[in-house]
Length: 285
Image: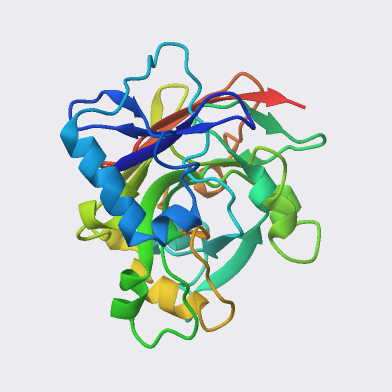
């Protein structure tokens, strides 16, 4: 299923995109697309049955804002340098273990919402990523297979990053990852049953119509199941938590000088197989 949240900021309602591409209202069945939904198989089954019946109310998509595909996110866990190509382009060795950082849930916005370039920023960058949404509580998982079994769904994410804040201001990466609007997420959540192999997905990103990233999740250093297993050794993952699993080659930081970092007026578009497409215009704060 493709599950969405639509409507004004703070007043999103749950919706479903059916097999014919028709947007349908789920607010009569569920209150939100969140961890509580993903953790409840009986409710998910009712949603599937309602979708197959074709009786869900149709929503007029014209002019309707699409919000973050997941509501009430507990935490966003980032995985750094997780593609061989990306590590090579920035001159880094492939890490021996996954690199973990955190993004605050309040950085999450809708897939087409405006992204704000921070004050004093000179190196705002793009990162198209596969997002993993946890569907069952995960702690101390023993294998990558268990990791995959705890995935509730997948989403498209732009892990927007300010490189000077990240790498030149001391401390951890978090300074460059947590500026407001820096985590566009959506347009929809695809339930895990519709993504039998998350390691075969094309990941693409354009800036002002020019293709910048053209990768595939097969290039990941640590596959999705292993990432979930590994993270569960250090923190408990709850339904609705999101792990963003790294970005392929093609970021601004990996290109020749002068590096084409984002400026006000730039438009970024990105997509992953089956997970939809995003479009953001970047503006100064």
